[in-house]
Length: 454
Length: 183
Image (cartoon, rainbow over all chains, first blue to last red; front, side, top):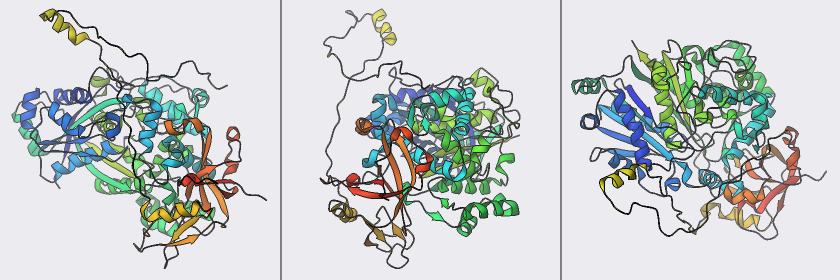
């Protein structure tokens, strides 16, 4: 595999509804922004790009099959090669990695990844029904198919086993909403308090409306290239943004569709198959986990995502990361729920299993220099969702994983002020970040590592 | 105190409109003005009836309609699935049916849904629970009744429960639901 660079990206404004444009034209907004960042015009880039990968989750929302080719067609990319990827909430992350593969393998030198979702075409509760159809329609959906309900069940187990609290979850909501206050692309730009989160309407106990992301219309696009691709673009007049951002790690994992089917493995199996290198190497951590198992913890059960752990371990190995909390400068992760952000801290090895709740209130994942109105005991180490995440930016499913890639590229290029018109969310000297895209109840998870090259 | 609702719910439906505002003359100014037009939105109906097969899982539904709760088991390893699978995920072997109607059962995890998908909105608030069974390796998603949805507590986790069956089977997984076990 050869080096792959994420050169530029674009995001449409995420909004509750975008009836002003069809989905193809919303994709074009993101695409035009990605091209503009290369300093190329539409037709010059069209000549240089080798192909694309399209990302969108649900045919139901558009009531349109083969919507991918309609976007390809609208972008003027026919007859270049393209295909659609789909994997629930991780669709965008899968798309990014498929575009990476196209370039890494030598099949393409310049590949476009674009994604979208227009969820406003049905009412919210019908939208919830569509999303719930991404659970087993024989066994899960008919019982009361509702994703917020599924995640709420996971977190009641997490709370019972590990003592996680609703206030700890609310810290995630406050952090991500206040970060998004400085992100003009975000759908929700509000400053909330812990009390606001707890007082908002209960959706699925104990998750309130402010613990949960919202449905959105939106699109995102990323341009990836090989070294040869960069030379070709520059020969065509491109001013490729520097420093370059290289994709240095790719990881992916899966799990059973029905969370009821997830295994509950013993300590030895966990240590052998799922523990991070860091966990393996620490006597203290092995003793900590031994104690958890003695108290009845089994892995992954319904409180943890082994797909996320698998994806993280794979990506870290690829990128040579041993201590993710200290070797990553930021993480953009799939916070469809505040509880799943906490679960994901653990899966990604930012903290140990069982310690996610405490980690959420430690301050380590917050942005430096931002007033959250919270008493945080520790300094930021690795901001998580500096953009505001799904909870505040919105979650137009097929665009989401690509949105994370765009924000990560901008962080690593030190381009946050340029793109947001506000420097608050720029992480100083950010050199390496992770993006994490997650589907279903943890069925497909991708982790990609992006690094700045000087 | 919880925030009181301050918005009316948005719904589709309404008047049928005949005649849409549009410039009388399509002169250049009028055509240029079309760029400033608000979008037209129409309603599109879509409904379909599927003939859904439960395939190899069918005996579970036949059993539930006869007030029996089945599971499947790998005949060699004994690994048992509360939600049946036709083949074991570790050995690939075809599983066998077993009756778990009388196994002790407990709440493993739960939630109270105050909102939901459109189909289930009229049933809110309802309790979803993952049920664990003695000697069974995986869980079963079901409804929990006999508890107050307004008084949710983590203490429900670990509570012993027992199955109850609909008298008039619907041939759905909800033909069985769970209630706190009689002491």
